[in-house]
Length: 294
Image (tube, rainbow, N blue to C red; front, side, top):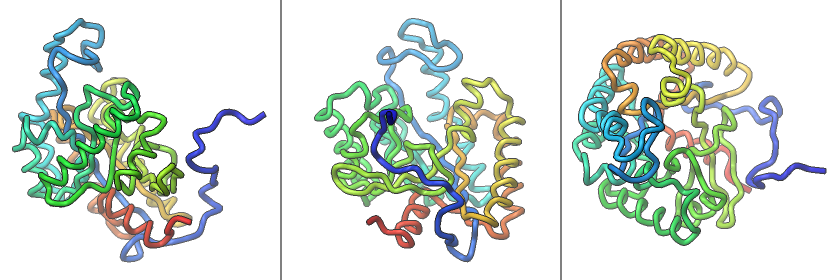
């Protein structure tokens, strides 16, 4: 008897797929995601990290995350500028009103903006279908208004989509999602409103689980990035792949972590032969051009 399934895609072994190249004949595509988030004070889930069990208002936890909008985001943007890497910016749209300057810092780097919900204080799984549809529509409109063009990509707040998120995204006109850390290549998803592309996004090379859940050091995160890059660059001789690296402004934006993060970026950019440094949106566009949905 088959186990229950999401029904979004079929199993596929990476070695059984067609060969292709990224632009310029590259075999490894690399993008750096920066999560730029805003949380409600004295409302919603009180914790991740340092004080997860404290009652609201849990000022310490809120302030820790707010550091990213006041300080960490600017330092992270400067680090990416210095290493010449164009970021993929995952934006809670509440940041546009709360801390527009931090978005400006990434916009100056020509960041590829991905919708990351309205706020990480509210996750899709707690919403009704109609409420989630309205939330997605509001996020879409906010980014279109502030950026002058609509968003193409989506990452659910808390990386926690509901059972219908993909259907609602395709319905609203989104073309790809980062919610499924299932592969090193893009994967077409089935939805009620037509195909939606899943672009690789990391659960492992991601500063939140690394620092918050596993309590690892900045040196460990640096080693994870470097080893992932070196290993995938070697693997890419057999199959073209994506390396995605996820950061948060309040985590990697801490001074002692930035130095090690910058060292990891410099390692990658100094070994750029056969590598395409890009964004999630450009990966989606290139893959769609090669393998349009059925």
